[in-house]
Image (tube, rainbow, N blue to C red; front, side, top):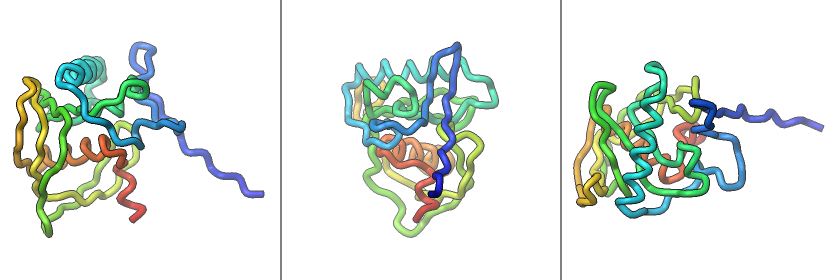
Length: 172
């Protein structure tokens, strides 16, 4: 009888509270498509993420974070993420974001990691540019083209909101 290797569990704690929990359970928010939500609800979630990130040590602060990476999303799902072009920049709040178009042939590959899987890095192919539609923090619909690192980060966070994990690309 062969024994399966158990996947490593990861629980990120801050001030004693579990923030990100990748343990497998029947309703793993990292593997579920997040529903659209109201602007007011999304803003509350986005500010919760930003407040959480302000408590992180400098070497663990990411360029983006989706709501379903945060432990509270298990009971209160929502399609919201925060991103920024660099560690010096302000957070951009994307509410109900969707990629509506993207480069067809132009892709780039980059070594990618994720807070939900610390220490794991894989090469991931992403679109060179993508057009993203979302609501901003004022509830106004935005349609904008993103490229370079910020575009890459946004694609990573939207994948999270669609239940796609960055390591899924190595299985294809």
